[in-house]
Length: 473
Image (cartoon, rainbow, N blue to C red; front, side):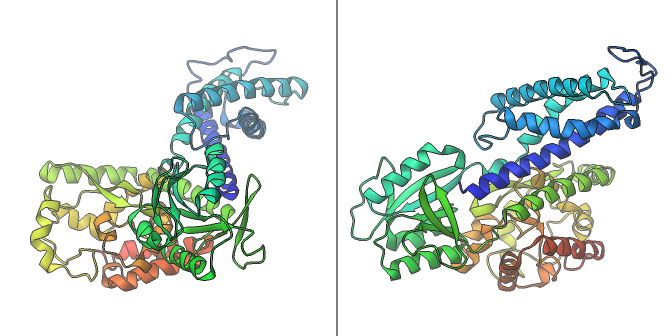
């Protein structure tokens, strides 16, 4: 994995840990405050017994807890091998870090005694709760992005050293899907890795595989071959990396990376601001938690209405293509009859959308409740759970059905190079009233112009569109 990606992931996990600790502190403090009638005294009373523990008289702890907990997590390896660590190992790491944190906090308070005494029972309750909440928060950390499939291009003697580096540094999360050889070479395996074909086959390989990055090794490439590979990667939204010594260090729009001394230039046509992408992920988590929390009573009513109408399942889970074409189960409130997918073929001739997608006005498969929740976009709200899981974002191109992707033109494939979202430019531009090709161009426009400000702008524009129901079917 690129160093920038590793650093961005670690910082995003730290930010989520801080938010988790703050939320845990709040919940434990409020809980301890509300049971004071049956638990009045502290667990280990000192000279001053706290008869009533409140959020206010324990608030001084948070400014000590946050830096100490994060520092101990860092020192005990809590931010290492984030993509590959097993769950039992992760839990033990967090428990060990929290144990060390309690000892450090106790020592700090012994030396710098706080003006307001610390409730031992609250501190014990928070410490135990933080082990579990930190562990649960980690389980939601981008589970679908654990490993990226890559292709390494080059001759056998040039590819082998690079494969050894990748084998050594597994924490980068890069899995070699195969090797692509120069056109003139034989297709025998390289270092036990299968050969997918030659350079001439690369466009077909990338179109038919879930590849996130292409690495070109060596220096003996002619300009036409190099440009051809770079053009294909740019068009499909696949990151293109090459030996930095081939063109030198002055190529515009290139990232210079260091793979244990192996210089690599990466060219990418997708957003690459690591810090901004970390903030985007934090916005996703916070926004989804707020959306689900604030609308929970309404969503419960929707679920009940769906169940009462025909007795079928409340949620509809459909396989969708996410980042780099990797599939996941996207959730929606069921707005159609139970056998809607089976009846779709009978209605195909009534499709009102161009391209490989299916949309029609007055679809007979939509239920009475379905008409209402589609008009208000409430059917989309379960996707906030997909956002929490890291499979989607609040803002991004809508995730397509895999069979639709099979019919994409090559230039349309690049919309899969960014995590799909609940809303995007298409949603605030008429949705189903926009033809398919314009829809694809709007998604690519979002990728090319992406910024945090654009995300905020689209979120604000989405609210009135949802309220009015413009373009919804």
